[in-house]
Image (cartoon, rainbow over the protein chains, first blue to last red):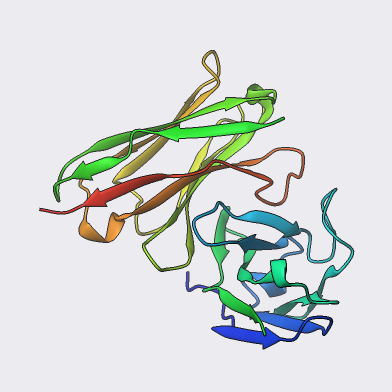
Length: 110
Length: 121
């Protein structure tokens, strides 16, 4: 199973909005509602930000939102803040009882 | 508060074996589906495998690169998850994270801090 495809990097200025895409196939994102997004700061463990493509766990800012269309999922961060600078990973459940991650996107807040 | 604490990482030669542990607290471990996720230095996240709760069947699933070499097990009496790694390769060098599908059953909601495994001669 190949990794999901994410852009290597995105950037934005404080207060702006950015969107990170995550492209898969009908075997993963296209065939699953179990798409999630994780934030990882350097040297830290990943943190769940979005699950089931669009839902936010308790305690996660409303500035983070997710969407899915066909085999592509997206994470949007609005009102960018300096602390949002991190690596972001998407993940999808696969019908064969396994999971796959995207390659990761480095977000730079200018 | 859910806490996951990995241990057992270290330096091992290619072809060698290592067993990682993950001690869990703050959750009903019996009910948790537990996963291992790894991250090679400077690289992205890679799912390694999962063990379901006993009530969920207790079955295991593995990623293709580790199938047949790695074994996930659990001791519910000790609230501990294990990862037995055999026939280690240099490409297995990574930080290994223990993570759960617990409150949120369709994503990895709690993570440990990770333990580093280095495979090198």
